[in-house]
Length: 485
Image 1: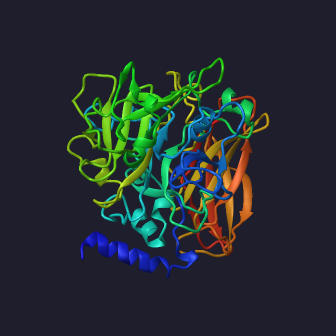
Image 2: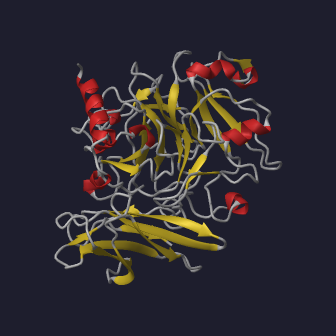
Image 3: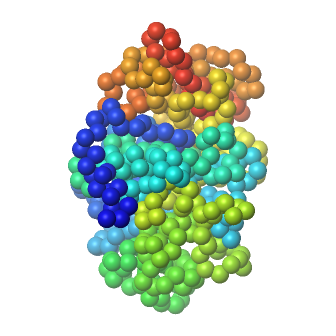
């Protein structure tokens, strides 16, 4: 029996034995982040092309995008066009990904920036603890690896070194609000759609949500090789030329800024321009419209699982393996997946998302929407924290979370304290004190505090969480999160 099959069998057996308390908490900079996902097979009342939205936090079911104002939801788009949806969408992108790679496939994180790769895997993944850490292996043992999201900070990022190149589970199946029964897979992922500084487009639709939406919104997507024949023939036009149906071609629909209507999809990039064969199948897609860069994954293992293609230059022909500089190896070999683990969806983020070149906070929408990890005050932090902007009515807030227990005293009654510092001053201002709940059904007992963002903006603030047992014998710090209010 092969090593991979042995691990699959072991994972299936152990998943029935693991008590909930033994499960590993989510962590990393994207823990609790909002996310737009596609669910393979769909959920009751929807198809697998419907964009399901996970809002800020760790609990609550996913929801559809608001029905009004022509949302960026493929199911709604196709329905408005009178199309019968009997085909599968593999992944989508709104063009707001930040593909921090050069044309030759090497990572290229801008100075003073940081980038993070978020991804999902197909069911059956087993992970490889020798690269990226044991997180995927642990999730495989829990039995629902295909319904989880993982994050990996790119080398070269300006964040504390212990966080770089380490894979974390950012969202569990329960935290995504997905049904706990059945073999689900998250096979589509886009975070910029629902993460960002308050934007007029979606705020008009639903003041509880804000999205980074370009002037002419677009949705880029691929369909599965198996169902390409069910796609309307007119969609395979590339310019004025008809192309052969292919799961390796990238399709696009655009929203008319005046009417708000979405266009009939057509081919954005055909398979042959990408250097792929007609019978290949792109199942993970991230597109950076500003840089004209693609990061994608193909079904199967004839190629590397993470590929880069530069649409904007005369770079090397064909897709390039995503890799680290100076012979540092392939990214797919560093994120903690095993050789035969299939990447199902990808998304990439950069602190300078939506930036027009101004220094933060004016040109740093991502930093104004998501906390950036910084060094701790008590050595190397041992717990996880995250922070994300939220809008309610006419009010902006930052939600910040602490996840995890002091490592020595472990799970039990304790206290969580949030301090705020106004950088560069390190004076600690207590903001929230809460009791820990050892009976929480969510591993790590995520604790939340919300900070109202004042109208006077421009402050650089750091959220600093600490957790301690009731006897105060151990104090554990979480990774501080710096934001721009």
